[in-house]
Image 1: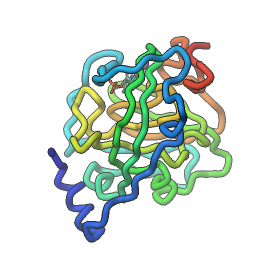
Image 2 (image 1 turned 45 degrees about the vertical axis):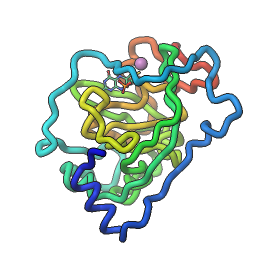
Image 3 (image 1 turned 60 degrees about the vertical axis):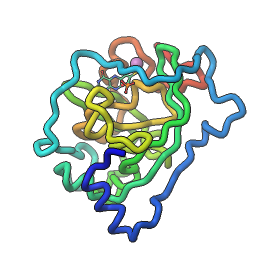
Length: 213
Ligand SMILES: Nc1nc2c(c(=O)[nH]1)N[C@H]1C(S)=C(S)[C@@H](COP(=O)(O)O)O[C@H]1N2
Ligand SMILES: [Mo]
């Protein structure tokens, strides 16, 4: 099992106690495959453009917009934040679903401890390399099973799947799960991100088939 040194260090700091495991509510449905979807067994890599070459020592994570004080974290600072495990399914709008993923990373709830998000904020724009954006209502962004993942099923994420840090939003189609995350901007009004400006739905609930608008 490939383990990132900082993640192992964090585990030891917590006394070797297993980290909290959150089970995504949709994995408890009797039928876990949303309408119009089919199950796949291996994980496709899909994105616009080519895989960016990211150097962890230069990677930074910004938190901006409607917060009391904007912040920027290095990878070392980000990876030292408390971590959780999340068990969830993936539903891609192109119709494949991949069940039983165990993610490890930083819960979005930790963001609330880093900055104070102003009460006027209702949406967040998630930014990813090279010029990717995707918009989410804060109600979805702060669901308890949403995290910035660094590992899946015990392995560090591969570059094609968004290393070093990607977002995972289990309750929405997978295009909302930005790869190669670089930061967040909290906003009062909803604004279309990259795929949303190209015809994808502003919200993207797979159970309501909110595919295109
Ligand atoms: N930075 C970035 N993140 C992205 C995308 C992208 O083009 N750029 N594509 C999205 C889409 S459309 C999908 S389906 C998923 C695919 O993730 P995967 O390649 O790990 O399966 O990433 C999402 N996150
Ligand atoms: Mo997609």
